[in-house]
Amino acid sequence: MNYRILMFKCCLLFAAVLLSGAVYAQNVVAQLENYATKFSPERAYLHYDKSSYFPGETIWFKAYLLNEVGTATESKNFYVDWIDDKGKILQHTVAPW
Image 1 (tube, rainbow, N blue to C red):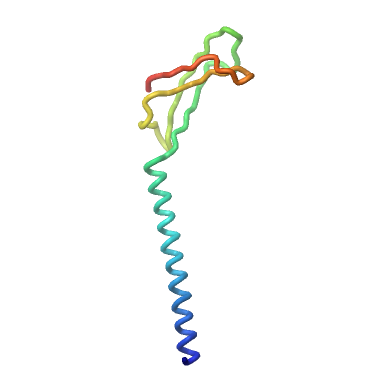
Image 2: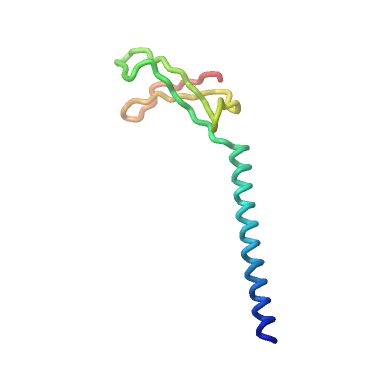
């Protein structure tokens, strides 16, 4: 086989591998963006009326459930487990959302 033809074929093979890698990378990025759109994480933010409480005192709070940029619409209930410093659950609260 001619040396020039062999080099040309090797260059074509190398270019095909590079192009397929670029297409694969674009496909992965598109899949990640699609996943983030469908399953954006919801984050809960609790806003308390005070920074500390005495034992037996009522705790007032507001809960904000947000996704990437706005109010989350997927969840219907908000669950809060109130625990002590030893990890024991003191109360389980479920609030309709």
